[in-house]
Image 1 (cartoon, rainbow, N blue to C red):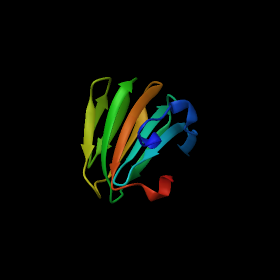
Image 2: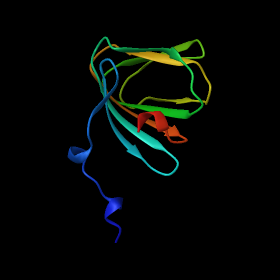
Image 3: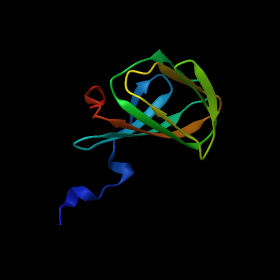
Length: 109
């Protein structure tokens, strides 16, 4: 069996992708999966990228704006961000999020 089909989060280095956003990243051939802890008050300004992004809230409250529409996301909520859509957000509390990007985020490697 291929040993690369299993992994442990303890072996993934943590990377600060933006102030207050600490990520553990897994890259496949077609996706980047980003497990993020976000400190309350931290934010990502409005921006765009070519990747489709799917964001899932596991813990906390995260305010997300996509193309001018704002929603507070809490556990159980998610958002689907089309490629090139303007978006950004702020952690209202400490948060744990999962983002999935397609295609791979080469800039996160």
